[in-house]
Length: 168
Ligand SMILES: O=P(O)(O)OC[C@H]1O[C@H](OP(=O)(O)OP(=O)(O)O)[C@H](O)[C@@H]1O
Ligand code: HPA
Ligand SMILES: [Mg+2]
Image 1 (cartoon, rainbow, N blue to C red):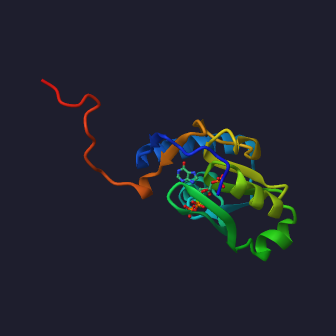
Image 2: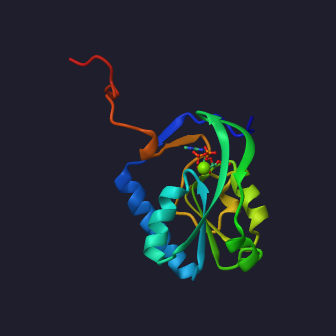
């Protein structure tokens, strides 16, 4: 179990907002680059990685497959189910010129594991929470540690009750 406080605020993100935020991230990455390859942290990193790769014209895209949140909002042990292949590790050593992309950094546990694999790579996320922020080189929006981000691929449209119950 994680030491992070249980989130009680919500930050819902639409597809449109995610696309805009990731494009904004890409403008910053364009200044920080150039990058020869992208390593995306599955599964959440697949979505921003596709947008970043398109904008920065990167064609070499690798995955590192990690899972840690086994059930909703509860973090377990980090499991690396697939590491980074030789195209990245033997051609690019410690990861210079490589861009690591994930959707968010929360406690920083996932980022720490991937940074150990590629210490010289540039680490980018769209969103960051304070505990994980020091591990990220570039991000766009910070939310508080007690906020849960709802991504568009995890949510659907549903009824929301009014803020004030009852009414006249
Ligand atoms: O900073 P941390 O506390 O480690 O949390 C951040 C990680 O958690 C989520 O992935 P998750 O393990 O839920 O898998 P998923 O990407 O397949 O949803 C998210 O996509 C990040 O990769
Ligand atoms: O705030 C979050 N939202 C979605 N997935 C997550 N995985 C870790 N933190 C979060
Ligand atoms: Mg993830």
